[in-house]
Structures are given as structure tokens and as C-alpha cells.
Image (cartoon, rainbow, N blue to C red):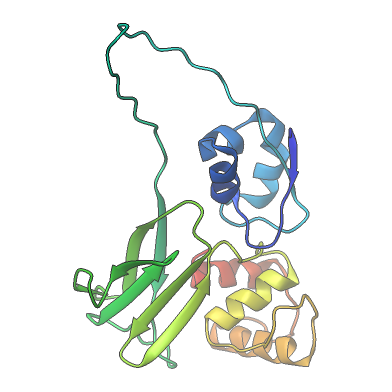
Length: 213
């Protein structure tokens, strides 16, 4: 399967996991140079993107006969980084939280007691194939779809980031409707941009900066 068509919620890490390959072997392959130039971030792909998947290489190791040998497979770590804020944009600093990733409890009841840092940041390792995370702080629960964020230069990417920043647009549908336009203008106003409702390069750059990706 040399070419693979990306589906919603997939990224290079998850594709590599499913194919049994290191993600860098796919992302850094010369046949994916154009994709890499367009998308920049291996964790943010768009449904319909085509990824070249190289074949596996057979590797031989020497070992004595009639003895047991242990081989360890290498895998690159994938990290989840979240900035937790209240509805006014203030960091939820030094707050105890519960975190579940891919059905595995990372922190909270039955896990190690962890707190956000002084900027409200949560960071942890996640399995490459994980598709969902749940964060609990006090009585608030956030359900996150991992690798579901679309590229910054798409309407879906705009909508997803605005929702994450508490500029609600409703469902991410790729339609520049009234709610999306209103949320975009509010974001432009709050960030000292020209309030024109146009999703141009300057607004994209600022949105990427504020959102973090």
C-alpha cells in the first residue's frame, strides 16, 4: 500500500502505528516532501491528503542457536499538550486534574496526583494510536478528539480552533455561516486585528499563535 488517503482523525503518528513503522520514516520520506511542505505539522492532516507509505525493511540480527534472545522495538513518543483556561481566558493554574487517554487512566482517582502548572498546562505521553482524551477539573469535563484538528488554512481548521478558544461556532462543518463569521469577528476584535470577517493570512497567523498550532 504505497499511497494512503487520510481520513478524519488521522495523523502521521496514527498511520505509522497502524502500518508498524516509525512515524519519521513516513513523514521524512522524499515522496512526502510536498505534503510536508503544505501541512508543516505531522499531527495536523486533512481528510483526502495522500500519504506515501514506504514498505518495511527486513533487518537481520545475529544470535547464538539454542538460546533465547530479547529484541526491543523502538517507538517514538507522542505527547499531548493542553492549556486549560476558564471562560475569561485565565489559566486554570495549579489545579488537580483527572486525565484518561485511550481508555487508560493517566491521572486522577487510582492514578498519580497531578496538577496543572502555573500557566494551566497539562503535558503527558500518549499512545500513537490514541484517538480520544478526557480531562476532568472539579466538575468540568472536556472530551478531546486527538488528531481531529484540521489544517490552519481550512474553514474546518478555523472552526475547530475558534471552538477550542471559546469562540463557539457550533459543529465543524466547513461552512462559513453566520456563527462562524461572528466568532471570527470576535476573535479579530479581541486580538487587535482588522474586524472584517475575512480569514486571511494575518488572521490565520494570529489564530495559530494564540491556539498554539
